[in-house]
Amino acid sequence: MAKAIKLIRGVLLTVTALLLAALIYGFYAVPDEIISVREKPANVSFVYTLTYEENQNKERIKSEGKDDTYDVNISFLKILPVKNSSLTVSERDYVAISGELFGLRLFTEGIIIVGIDEVKTAKGNKSPADKAGLQKGDVIISIDGVKVTSCNEVSEIMEKSGGRVMKLQYRRKDKSFVTDFQTAYSETEGKYKAGIWIRDSAAGIGTMTFYDTERKTFAALGHAVCDVDTGEILPVFEGDIVNAEVNGCYKGQKGKAGELCGVFSSESKGVLYLNCKCGVYGEMKNMPETDTLYPVAFNDEVKKGRAQIVSTVDENGPMVYDIEITKISYENSEDKNLVIKITDEDLLNKTGGIVQGMSGSPIIQDGKLVGAVTHVCVNP
Image (cartoon, rainbow, N blue to C red):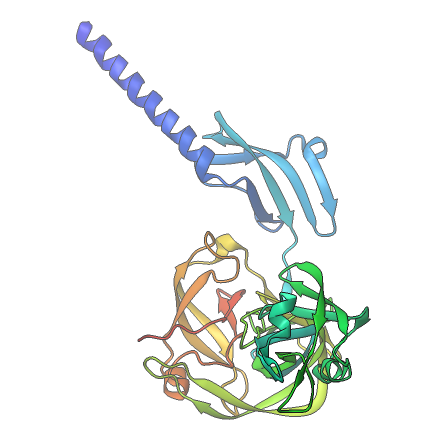
């Protein structure tokens, strides 16, 4: 009898420990915010179940557009409560994938300071920018209350300033400042100078990711357009995209990324309105016609393994190439979540792998859009 009681106690302690471990694991492993799509049932896992249907009207806390958000209860084996979470049930988006090469022309919102220099005066070298507290990467918004939109405009104001003190408004990161700014007279050039190097525009080529035929918008590039000197994301004042054709390719080599070479056309095909770390976005002037739309995957639908990218690397236009998704991570980065490896021999022979200009190439897996190419990894 004593042995039986001891055995029962042991079993009960083991079961209790396992249940406690399951509850603790579930509390930390089950996310506080869960996203689901209407076309498939919402669940967490085989052992952790969510419930909300019975009191749907009572627990529904938001309804805007295509998304509904609910307070849900998470339980272990439908018996023991684990935690409360938020469930967002969304309509799945469908888009037309592209893979076309395009040219980008962007004018910045404000004038970016890309370098600071000294002015040689009769009393020695002076740095008006240092004296005013300006730094590389600052964006000049206005001078004496007048908004400036081009480098030529800033240069003309500085040269005609006569050395007077001006009120210069600038932005650093997300904050705005106003400082006194006074030019210095250059003995070598015979005019007033600000001692700053500035930029107001950028241009380049990239790959279109997708079109949203319902909203008449597009997404491209997969990463932000950044200033080559400061590394800062260029704020968009205005810009557009144009057609581009490949006229050559420098293949990627060990220790060096390759590059597509393209030729711009003059006709604008779309207007840019956003430049952010996930790419550039805008509105199409004439939406391309297509009968094929791809569902946009949710995070839990992406897996390691075979996939494809759609890219333009020669005169043949967008082509499908085989890749492998080797790593998936949503914890450390909001814009770089996948690592891919090119497995297509044809693409490797043409480009040597991912090259500059292929950024934005859509990634397709199981018939869904799962991401876009953003950067190339260069092996030393």
